[in-house]
Every structure is written in C-alpha cells, then in structure tokens.
Image (cartoon, rainbow, N blue to C red; front, side):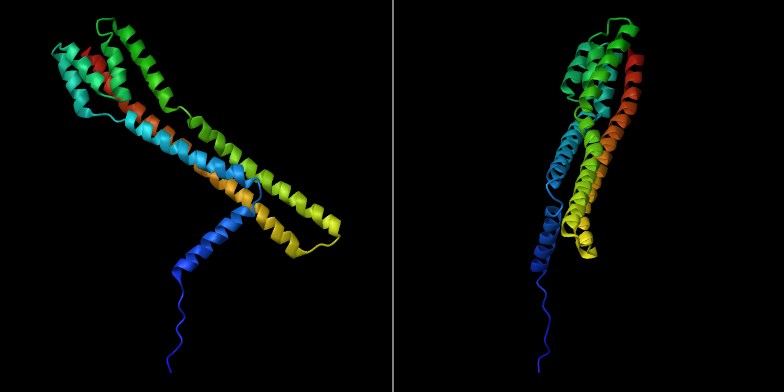
Length: 217
C-alpha cells in the first residue's frame, strides 16, 4: 500500500494569502482609499526627492581640488569652466563665488550664503508634504475607526440585540483603518526625517569646502 502524501501547492497558498490581505484592506471601508493614495504619494515623493538630493549633494573631491589648484595659479577662467561642468549644488555654489572673485570677501560670503540657501531650498522642495502626510494619515485612520464603531452601535440599537461576535467582527474590520493610517504615517515620518538628515550631512561637508574656497580667495 502506497502511503498518502499531502501535497501543498505553494502558488495557491500565495494567492490565498494575497487575497486575504486584499480582502482585509477592502473591509476597512471607503476611508482606506485616501489612506492608500497617501501611501503611494509618500513613496513617490521619497523616491523623487531621494534621487534629486543624491545627485545634487554629490561632492567630487578631485573636481574641488582642481578648482582650488587653478585658483592658486590665478587661472580663474579655467576654474570657472570646471565649476560650470560640475552639475551639482556644490558646483553652482562655488561658481557663484568665482563670479565675484574680484569683489570684497564680505560680498563673496554673502553671495555664497544666498546661493547655498537657494540650493538647500530646492532640495527641501515637496518634503513638507511628507510631514503633512505623517500627520493626516493616522487621523484618517482614526476617523474611519470611529465612524465604524458608531455604525456598529447604531445597528445594535436597531436590532436590540447585543452579540459579541457582531461587535468584535465589525470592530476588527474598522480597526484596519487605524492600523493602515499609523503605518502610512510612520513611513512618511521616517522618509521626511531621513531626507532632512541627508541634507544636514551635505551642509556640513559643504561648509568645509567653502571654507577652503574662501581661504584661496
């Protein structure tokens, strides 16, 4: 006699799990739609800002050293050309200083500071929306849960029948909104502060390069 072997289809199991998660989100109600939209918006904003910040905050040490070396040799025009070819925030900031190389140091420091503030503002563009989503998403989840609880007790009052199964079943469905809202809020909050940390780290490195630049002037 050949023993019976229980064969489990992993593909079917995966489909079943995905279906259950999808059904779980659907049970959260209409309020899940804006929460999911906010989650997609958070991911898009983070990827877009992360790519831009990484590109702009790249500091090529060799390029900076070449510019400084040409300034020491009084080859300002060549240094300007190198700065123009450096398509980063640092290159544009140094270029603004080179354009005022014949001006007093105070004026050069002023233009460097203004250009730096402009570049930092460009990096921070739209990151405020992540902070906004971090606050709105949990509130939407809480609203969805509260509205669901109100509906549950309203139905109980109409039926004049209290059942633990009815209360628990309806309540867990509405708690999905709170859970989803909190998750989206945490993700948006983490993304916002990570981007700010990247900008802060760049600012520190930039100050070191600008100090060397001013010394050469």
